Length: 238
Image: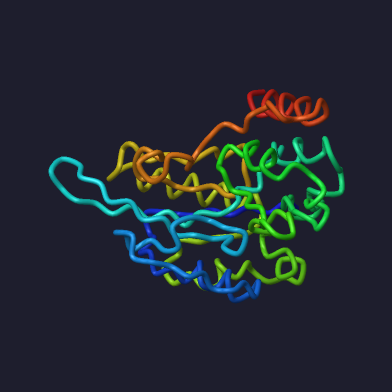
């Protein structure tokens, strides 16, 4: 059965264990960083940074609040990045049948990298300027296929990161939402039925990051993807 992440932002302490674990498992090199006025580092996702804990400081009702957002690819049900990449090479972006993970291959070097990035409503894919290969979170597919949790989930000490069967994760997400709403009435689940990485936000998602949630744009979907998306939504409404 397809897999899903549930990321409970009300429990995130920004320890960045998930960010480090992702680097370690994928053997990604460190990035040179500088103090730019935020505890968040590096400043953005990159070809060698698949997971990034974003920090946002806000003032609400006269009180300072820190919002922590461990960002990664959402593994969309009908990924616009694949719709765009398929225009050039259908081998570039694949969907794993077992998990639903959206996987970028070495053939991404043959497609319009910036077009793929702009097709993503979350601005996730990043292009290596030298090889032209595009990279992002791969759901730790090698681990998952061997019965293990993704490295970011395994490293989380607070219960923020959760991963499992789709039905199980949605049940957990809805249960937590009902509990959190008692204290935070504005709490929502982000794009819950369109992606495989569902976040629980205790307030407006855009307060965490301007592209924290978004409707997957049909602009770059092929006809098969658009039909599947429409039929999926009609099935859920029924």
